Length: 238
Image (cartoon, rainbow, N blue to C red):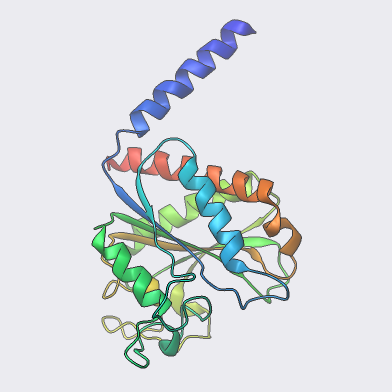
């Protein structure tokens, strides 16, 4: 038993060492929304997941972009990723929280961009992945999103609801200039320079509220997210 434990530990250590050599730049974008759900901060739960991911091995070239409490922005802690007023609009000379986050992300010249949000009104304790419809890297983004949501689903009791297009939500008034389709601002290739871009909707702010607010669950999900991302990066040679 001791020999087996040593072999497994040695194998894990070697895997971590290999994955730590990744040169890819990863940007994490937790939701900054504090206006979704009753007595609920989506910003807090999503940030908890991402902080757990960033703290876990392997250490990558990774950064977080977040507008929460940033001054001189409009909608820095509320708003939807699908609405022009909350994203691309400049109001009283001020950028939106989303625009600020994307500017900060692009400064890092990321290879991978991962946004984490919580869903609402679904009556499902589940997890969804979203990708940008019509994107040049649509197929690859679908694979990445599929793997990430599967990894989280595997360590929790969240139902895996698969990967959807960002045009499918039915609540958008933001449109991608290239495809002419409804989209998510943060996944738009005209806005976000990262090659690989996915958005995860983790749980539901109603039915999953207690689960999402539990720090142990946030940690478990963040760690699973990090491990699967690192494996994907290694397989891609990034």
